[in-house]
Length: 95
Image (cartoon, rainbow, N blue to C red; front, side, top):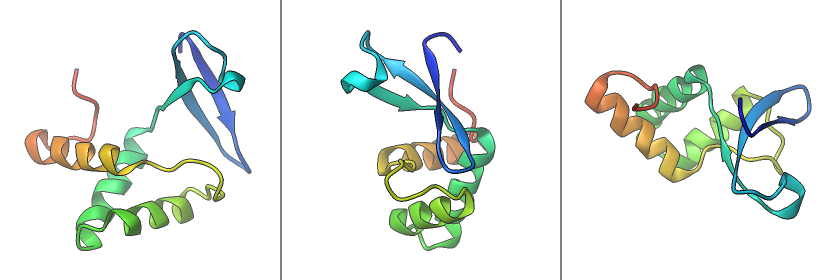
Protein backbone atom coordinates (compact mmCIF):
# COMPACT_ATOMS: atom_id res chain seq x y z
CA UNK A 1 0.00 0.00 0.00
CA UNK A 2 1.48 3.33 -1.02
CA UNK A 3 2.27 5.50 2.00
CA UNK A 4 1.22 2.73 4.35
CA UNK A 5 2.87 1.28 7.40
CA UNK A 6 2.41 -1.97 9.25
CA UNK A 7 1.30 -1.44 12.83
CA UNK A 8 2.18 -4.42 14.97
CA UNK A 9 0.67 -5.38 18.30
CA UNK A 10 0.77 -8.42 20.50
CA UNK A 11 0.28 -11.24 18.02
CA UNK A 12 -1.41 -9.19 15.31
CA UNK A 13 -0.49 -6.87 12.46
CA UNK A 14 -2.75 -4.24 10.94
CA UNK A 15 -2.18 -1.98 7.96
CA UNK A 16 -2.39 1.75 8.59
CA UNK A 17 -2.34 4.53 6.07
CA UNK A 18 -0.47 7.68 7.04
CA UNK A 19 -2.50 10.75 6.19
CA UNK A 20 -0.25 13.76 5.76
CA UNK A 21 3.45 14.12 5.14
CA UNK A 22 4.83 13.48 8.62
CA UNK A 23 6.09 10.07 9.73
CA UNK A 24 4.07 8.16 12.32
CA UNK A 25 6.42 9.12 15.17
CA UNK A 26 5.62 12.82 14.67
CA UNK A 27 1.94 12.50 15.58
CA UNK A 28 0.65 12.07 12.04
CA UNK A 29 -3.04 11.42 11.60
CA UNK A 30 -3.41 7.70 10.94
CA UNK A 31 -6.34 6.22 9.05
CA UNK A 32 -6.79 2.61 10.10
CA UNK A 33 -7.47 0.16 7.29
CA UNK A 34 -9.90 -2.46 8.59
CA UNK A 35 -10.53 -5.71 6.70
CA UNK A 36 -13.96 -6.67 5.39
CA UNK A 37 -14.03 -9.53 7.93
CA UNK A 38 -13.49 -7.06 10.78
CA UNK A 39 -16.14 -4.70 9.39
CA UNK A 40 -18.65 -7.56 9.05
CA UNK A 41 -17.95 -8.65 12.63
CA UNK A 42 -18.57 -5.09 13.86
CA UNK A 43 -21.86 -4.81 11.93
CA UNK A 44 -23.10 -8.23 13.13
CA UNK A 45 -22.21 -7.36 16.72
CA UNK A 46 -23.92 -3.97 16.40
CA UNK A 47 -27.21 -5.62 15.44
CA UNK A 48 -26.92 -8.39 18.04
CA UNK A 49 -25.95 -6.05 20.92
CA UNK A 50 -29.01 -3.79 20.68
CA UNK A 51 -27.16 -1.06 18.75
CA UNK A 52 -24.49 -0.45 21.40
CA UNK A 53 -21.27 1.05 20.06
CA UNK A 54 -19.40 0.38 23.32
CA UNK A 55 -20.43 -3.30 23.26
CA UNK A 56 -19.19 -3.54 19.66
CA UNK A 57 -15.82 -2.01 20.60
CA UNK A 58 -15.43 -4.36 23.58
CA UNK A 59 -16.34 -7.43 21.52
CA UNK A 60 -14.01 -6.27 18.73
CA UNK A 61 -11.11 -5.86 21.17
CA UNK A 62 -11.77 -9.34 22.61
CA UNK A 63 -12.28 -11.09 19.24
CA UNK A 64 -9.15 -9.67 17.61
CA UNK A 65 -7.04 -9.65 20.82
CA UNK A 66 -6.24 -5.94 20.66
CA UNK A 67 -4.63 -4.71 23.90
CA UNK A 68 -6.15 -1.59 25.53
CA UNK A 69 -3.68 1.07 24.40
CA UNK A 70 -4.27 0.16 20.74
CA UNK A 71 -7.16 1.48 18.68
CA UNK A 72 -10.44 -0.16 17.82
CA UNK A 73 -12.99 1.22 15.31
CA UNK A 74 -14.51 4.48 16.51
CA UNK A 75 -18.20 5.34 16.70
CA UNK A 76 -18.18 7.17 13.37
CA UNK A 77 -16.61 4.21 11.51
CA UNK A 78 -19.00 1.65 12.98
CA UNK A 79 -22.07 3.75 12.15
CA UNK A 80 -20.74 4.34 8.63
CA UNK A 81 -20.30 0.59 8.11
CA UNK A 82 -23.83 -0.09 9.42
CA UNK A 83 -25.30 2.59 7.14
CA UNK A 84 -23.37 1.22 4.16
CA UNK A 85 -24.58 -2.30 4.97
CA UNK A 86 -28.20 -1.14 5.16
CA UNK A 87 -27.91 0.69 1.82
CA UNK A 88 -25.87 -1.81 -0.21
CA UNK A 89 -25.89 -5.10 1.69
CA UNK A 90 -22.11 -4.98 1.80
CA UNK A 91 -19.52 -3.81 4.32
CA UNK A 92 -16.95 -2.95 1.65
CA UNK A 93 -15.89 0.66 1.23
CA UNK A 94 -17.94 2.72 -1.19
CA UNK A 95 -15.95 3.54 -4.29
